[in-house]
Length: 400
Ligand SMILES: *Cc1c(COP(=O)(O)O)cnc(C)c1O
Image 1 (cartoon, rainbow, N blue to C red):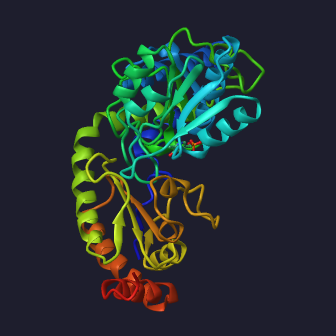
Image 2 (cartoon, rainbow, N blue to C red):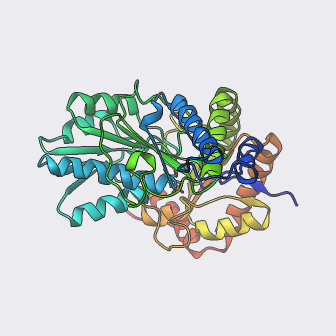
């Protein structure tokens, strides 16, 4: 059975282009970019060209790009750096939102223990954080606003340029976790007035374990890793040249094909949303229109997301209940709770995230299988029987 892979928000398959871009840097030009002989210098030149190409994709300058081990490290370094800069000016207030990735939330918790005040803004029911909320929350001592570009579970896309404008006007640093956006949505750090931005290669068909932090010229980063003077002294360790080359190639390819892919994915996504909405007692999570092209997120009342995933796996469909980080734990997703889903409902979540490799036939199969599996699970669930009979009683006025 051919598996249908619909978990592209967790990770993506590497593209042929990315693999081909990496091979020469494993087989031929494998020198250390810090070495002065020719083979080292060839690697150093390749590294610089990758920096230029990545910068060009997001409207940055090459020297504003710092390579990291991925999105998590970029988030950590961006936030810690802004906090240190703030503290040195007596500013210890940070604004974020309740539905950020754990790489952001856990870093903020750490800073809270150090005496920073962290304000997590409420997320609107449709999965949005609005610039007016930011404007209202900014204080004299605010040193950082960190709001994700697009949410990895429910796919909603934030009004980033408006938030950037508010922060710039109030002279507060603005970081955005753009891991789900890079390669999928057009990004421009100048136009959107972004000071710090995180991206990760394995979310746009590049290799795992590599990412980048954009930091606007003049923002002094705090080192998380001490050692050699790589990355202009801000991130020690011999550069992973093959992975960096793969990331540059993958990002360029994703940006080149963005419009075509966006259109294809939006059509497939809308078909899925329309079809799955017909399941009784289902709820779409996130904004119906303003969402990532490949993201479909639902809650189905009366079922356990985990059981749903296992049965879908049996039927050859790889999906997720929320983020890869929360699956395996019994707690419902903090993102679904943040948009106001009750605990029981949040447990019955399903996230399907598509890539341009998915086909119409696959969508047809998903639309056939998911309603069957949901009905099967509900049939077995005492919880579901309660839900349905409560509803009837409410309708007939037995419960006031
Ligand atoms: C995947 C993801 C990350 C983490 O990136 P890694 O490269 O896996 O460390 C951070 N933020 C968001 C929104 C993500 O989807």
